Length: 108
Image 1 (spheres, rainbow, N blue to C red):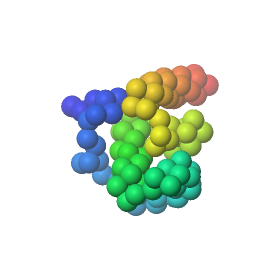
Image 2 (image 1 turned 120 degrees about the vertical axis):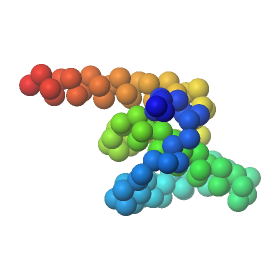
Image 3 (image 1 turned 30 degrees about the horizontal axis):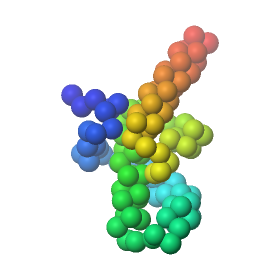
């Protein structure tokens, strides 16, 4: 079985509902101005596509790990400029927080 916490694991076979695909597209539209600004004149199609693909891969990894879109937006877990090491740490923290939140909700 694939490890959802491994960001190097491709999740291309992940079935994505149309509503989630729309949410991801909308989220990219929020990041796009930041990406263009941060590329600051070094904007090339390749650099832009790299950030867009990295964003998509991170969303797939977060979705496979069970993170809700609210959590992703709140903690900005899909930032395409965060290093891979920092992303892994953020992913582990998000999964832990979400697990704690679910346990608290279950106790009520």
